[in-house]
Image 1 (tube, rainbow, N blue to C red):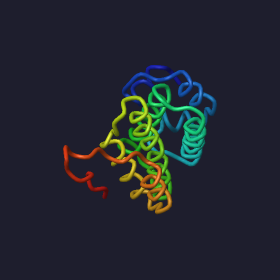
Image 2: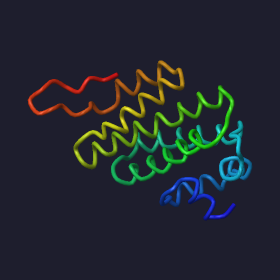
Image 3: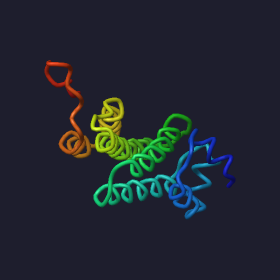
Image 4: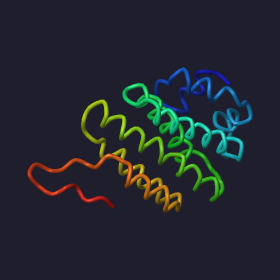
Length: 158
């Protein structure tokens, strides 16, 4: 696996920890980088990464976590858009996209003091696409509230 292939996959700059995470499992890396179909090894590896991001979010937040969550989210979204997968793997990938999106929205709120509405709504959409009601409820309960309009009511949540 070359750096060029990985950069093309994500379409952006990568963090060192995301690179080391991916290269730790050659079978998953092969499916993520070269495969046309995302399989169990890749999905499991991505879910492990999301759990790691959740732990990091519990311990630390802010700009570094924003970068990590954005890179992970970009990778999962790229797989969802450009690859094939079973229905089960698709639901798990959507769930795996929801948490980095939620973390990214929170990190933006922490760093910039305002919610990244588009990312927050993407987290909700991914949770719904995964058919995981608990995940969607968690995002609503523990995500930043979308901005309010000047003097008006809060932006409605879907």
